[in-house]
Image (spheres, helix red, strand yellow):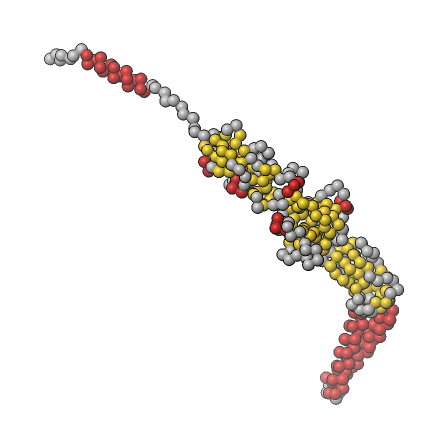
Length: 352
């Protein structure tokens, strides 16, 4: 049986096949990612105008007045002012001839009392000694023992030893001088916990915070500076100067002694003091990565770029950082969750 197929049907089929074929091989146009709108700021550099320098004096919380426990005439002094001493070091002696003699007598009396006690104890144990005599011998032994102990301690107290390690700041007596018990002969200050004390005016005290880093300069370390930080500030002004006392810790250095004068440089807001001045940024711009490292996003050639920074302080006007960010950089302060490394961005300048 023969089917009559219109001649135009194959043409339609071929035409549809061509449409299908062409649609399978057509390439879609590539669209670029639209830039992300982000807010940026140009960081401010902390300059010397943000810092103040104060005169200060080195202090120590460890201060000991050292005295003899017995009266006498000083026969020897073994240390001088400004000398470093160790705990237990011999400082001075008083004449101890009479004390030694008294100790010898006390020790002999003790030996005699012990001998009498041992002799009479045998009689007491045999019930051949009246009870009153036994009480008497016991009492004499106790008295002799106490007297001998006191005499021996007085001989030992004729030598004066340092109770702490530190520096002899004052020598208050001389060889040949009679001294009474309890009257200071030396003043010794510790050097393990050195501080600088400065006074700050009422107009500036609010700008200084505990923990702010400082730079300390002393004549004994000419040309060098030591790191430190604010550890205490008074809440009440001195009635005479109307200034507020501020205590600053200082890096331990064996050349520093209590009473030395120097300078303390503080950058307001806690930026710290270094050769490369710090940069202040809005607090929201400084982030933490998974490894607890601080970083910021900056705009470089129209794209977001991660930069790691070091936080050197926190102030009322923002966070102070060093390294990674420089003057003139555009730091992203808003829209950070939308960016990653290489994300095209459209920066919008904000005012700090």
